[in-house]
Length: 254
Image 1 (tube, rainbow, N blue to C red):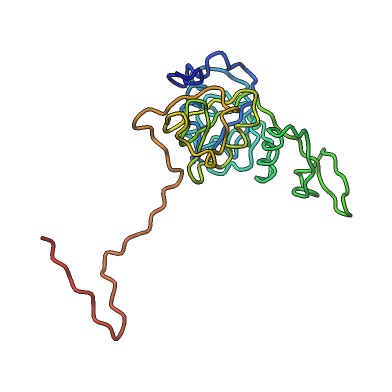
Image 2 (image 1 turned 90 degrees about the vertical axis):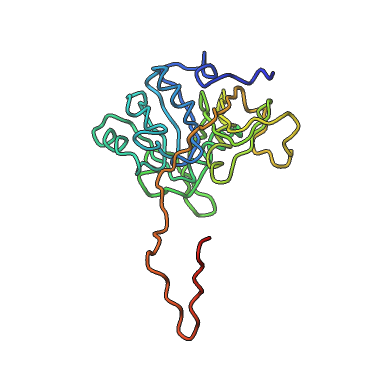
């Protein structure tokens, strides 16, 4: 058995957690979030955390669980609109927030994983985003300097993994997960499906296993929440036939 495989989230995080950590948490809304690992952090009781994530889930899922228990001291994020407790704590001065334009946040994480300590971007120049940050002129245009982010711990959700931690993400659940997996001192992954070594097409691997230290497999029946379920309303009345055409025949169930 691979030394990277652990029986559950609590075991996978054993010895890694401490107060005042900087943690990357993958996902976008509730899509691709490492929910089992977040729940294990909640249960551990560590506090004073700085969490880097596009947003903070919702009130009863994702990082919203850690906000509810007051384990997060600071959020580095780009969007907070779906979490009422997040907004309440921020407006009450109970939570520190470092807002980032979404693309800038993604690039700060990617830069951290690439060993780039800082970069310049036009996004945010002349706004509150640039306050207190160095600026520089390139080709007659002003750019603001942003720092790369390297976390103490990255929490990642993937679709498939082999025992060495080579990862494949599924569709939009890829979001922030690949860059976060590269930008932490330790990366722990929850995966939906574990496959045999050598069964993954090397050209389809999104995150090489060299970045992954610990893996857990989601149990049967693992729930992937939908942030806002939107469905098309069905019309109860039959759709009238267009002028000049025959109506569709009615079929009788047998």
